[in-house]
Length: 153
Image 1 (tube, rainbow, N blue to C red):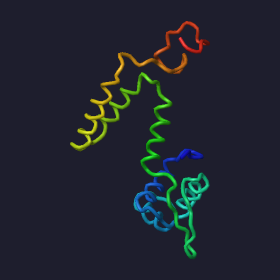
Image 2 (tube, rainbow, N blue to C red; image 1 turned 90 degrees about the vertical axis):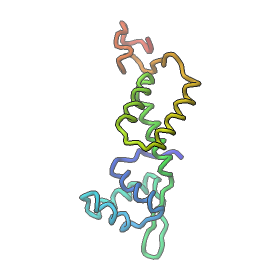
Image 3 (cartoon, rainbow, N blue to C red; image 1 turned 90 degrees about the horizontal axis):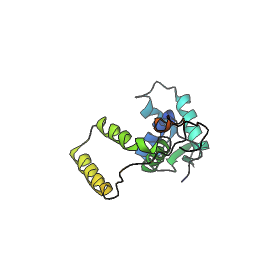
Image 4 (cartoon, rainbow, N blue to C red; image 1 turned 30 degrees about the horizontal axis):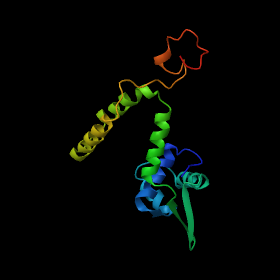
């Protein structure tokens, strides 16, 4: 599913509640987030409204209340965000970025076993060098190009 807009950090907080509860009223969301954020109920309702407008939250009326549910799963949303993030960095920096993410994360033994399996599978397709996908001036790989107007060095 293609999102109409990116999810902001504040909207992500709302979505985490909806993903956890599967269906939630605005009061359910407000009750959870008031423990974490210093938001007034109107602030939370504003974020809910934005998510509905973006097509990320679905609304159904139940009596006088509205029930909200996610139109995209948390896993899919995380994958979309990661894809967007990696689309915006140099291909040559992806491995270092992933290593940095792993080194800063607290991992279980199961997580580490999973990562080892993924690395073993990736090793079969590994290449000697990753080509840079940036244009000159976008990363340090090509900072020595003599003609900055070239599309690629």
